[in-house]
Image (tube, rainbow, N blue to C red; front, side, top):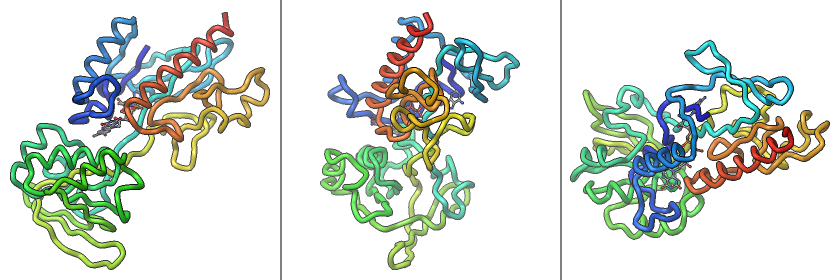
Length: 301
Ligand SMILES: Cc1cc2nc3c(=O)[nH]c(=O)nc-3n(C[C@H](O)[C@H](O)[C@H](O)COP(=O)(O)OP(=O)(O)OC[C@H]3O[C@@H](n4cnc5c(N)ncnc54)[C@H](O)[C@@H]3O)c2cc1C
């Protein structure tokens, strides 16, 4: 049973073009990848419940490792195993005026719809990771100029080198280092953005109709009980990192690679501590977690 609180696809569903997914040499949009994946899952017998948000997780008796409470339902779901794959949420830019202008110039995805709004304009992409690099490349085909704003000194720390090379070579992308957005203004729509150099504290105002916030994400782990151990940023720990957890001390086997601090409960994808934060990695971890589930179910048989 797949519980999905919003719509299948998660973050990948909002990506305009995924170029590094295995088997798609010319790239694929997140929406199309999501549709194909869901059809494939249906074919293999997965049952989707959407929208259905897991509200809490408690631990069951006997061979039921978990009891899930679901939002909007009085029913509880008893499961022998659970794979936590609740991903992560976008970080918001901490700037005056941002909240009022969300959806009116402040965006968290760069799809064909947003790109239409950027024709011949100067736009800002905030962030130094792969999502920011892709958005900058994608928008640079329509926008007159893309300002790629990063807090660090260069792109090498957080962006794949194949992408950073392309971004750096693109004539209408300007990389602005050591910079944060302080203020966003506009009547009905974003008009200006105030930038601050965090080293010199120098400020400047840029006329722009769009800011794309690509500044990372927080794990969606609020619904989990404290027994599911997390790292200092809230990502779920697995494998060797939970070997000393109380539930594993009395167990007859060590935790599997993707098993959490509670036996039979797994974590995969962006929600997992140390995960790579890429589609291929999330899909691969999902497959590995399912294998772990089969092993656990085998022990119950
Ligand atoms: C704009 C953008 C572009 C990207 N481009 C690329 C790319 O080109 N290549 C690449 O490899 N990666 C890319 N990524 C990263 C990639 O999308 C993620 O690494 C991947 O989607 C992670 O998958 P996930 O299933 O772990 O989590 P998510 O995609 O975050 O999915 C988690 C799902 O769980 C649901 N959920 C959350 N909480 C609950 C709950 N309590 N109950 C039920 N459901 C819940 C959410 O609604 C969501 O659908 C991009 C990300 C973004 C945002």
